[in-house]
Amino acid sequence: MLTSHRWLSKTALLMALGIISTAAIPMMTANLAEANPQPYLEEYIFSQSRRDIVPEGTFIPLSSENDKIIVTPKETAKVTLEVERDIRSASGNIAIRRGSQIKGKLQPAFGGTQFVAEELILRNTDERFPIEASSGVITETEIISRKTDPDILEGALIGAAAGAILAEVFGDIDFGEVLAGAGLGVIAELLLRGSEEVEVIVVRPNNGDIDLKLESDLILD
Image (tube, rainbow, N blue to C red; front, side, top):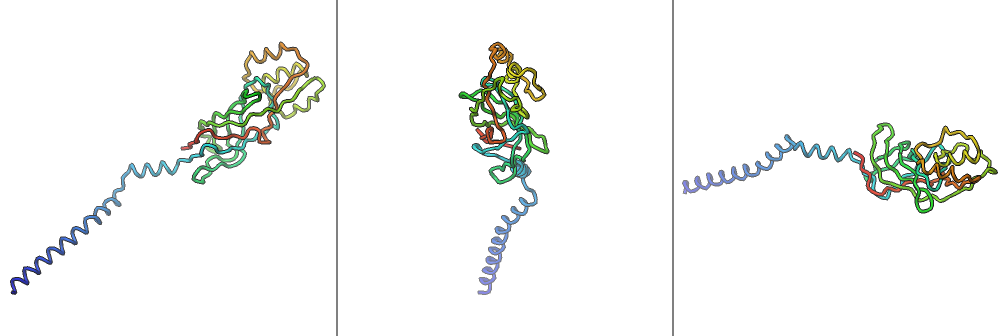
């Protein structure tokens, strides 16, 4: 009987040791994993933390130091505008700070003009990102003739084509704020008309005329 008890005791001891050893294996594995984290996982998490996504459909209000931008209905003019307020990403972070710049162009669209964004320049960092966004179509027009008070042009940003025809109407005007890059064909067409009045499109950037709507997700990383 004594031999049997001894055999049972040894068996129980070995079984207990086996259970303890088996239980210790996952703990050791976990400790090793904690001591040696996967570098690619850290890099992935870090890269994700730096990425901001402004979702498609987000509205971006814009403003300009000029109260008006004047172009002809057929004119394409490059302009640079400022973001009016901070824009947050899908995660709630400030992705675009107020005062960041958006470069693009006013171009003919559906009987009016439309601002199409091309590039975002972030404030402070000067980082540049392509952006797909556009404003609604602006159709407000104004007939300007020799009887029109030229003071209405004060403080306006004038497209090169519009500036050319307005010079014909009013004589010499200050081209210090005339935009560059209008097509020669457009200017020639305007000059050859020889009209004493001209129809122009008046964009009021500080009244929400050219607020943008994102046409695709804007990824900043």
